[in-house]
Image 1 (tube, rainbow, N blue to C red):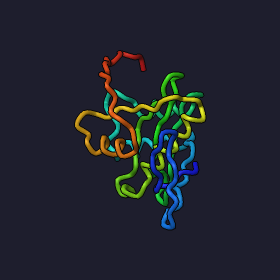
Image 2: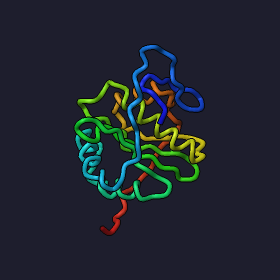
Image 3: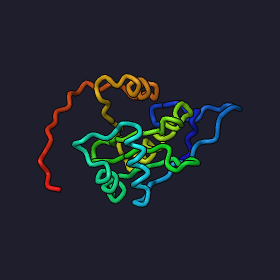
Image 4: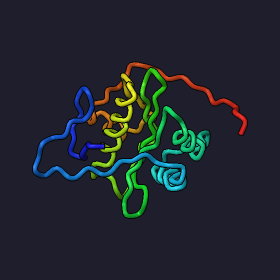
Amino acid sequence: MGVTPDSEPCRAGFRQRHSATTVAAPSVEAATAYDREAVVALWRACDLTRPWNDPDRDFLQAVSGATSAVLVVRGGEGVIGSVMVGFDGHRGWVYYVAVHPEARRGGLGRALMAAAEEWLVVRGAPKIQLMVREGNEVAAHFYQALGLERQAVITYGRLLNLPE
């Protein structure tokens, strides 16, 4: 995906800093249906799942959709990072940003977000958005460090009784 962990956000995306110490970028690639079990296990290990969301269904819908994908980073133990990305025709959305707890602080989250942004830019998305649960200051600081800004919106929602 061409973005290193030592990249910095800019208006049009992430721009690589020129440095002799720049680490090679992790390889970010599209997940396939065969990655479902590993990716969902990662989401659970990162405490991203909630009882009202079916992560298996979320994963399968994303990898089989024309306007969505799950991007992953693989390590020696399998999938160590993921991000779900989608374009609704108006905004690009990011969900399930996950880096295995033992692989954090090495630039994988930044590389995943850069890959998600690149995926959206290629599809013509004019804006990237994501939601952070209230009180998750670690995530809020991470996204702010990437140049994302808190938006002046309030989200409303209601669980629907959807048939299984």
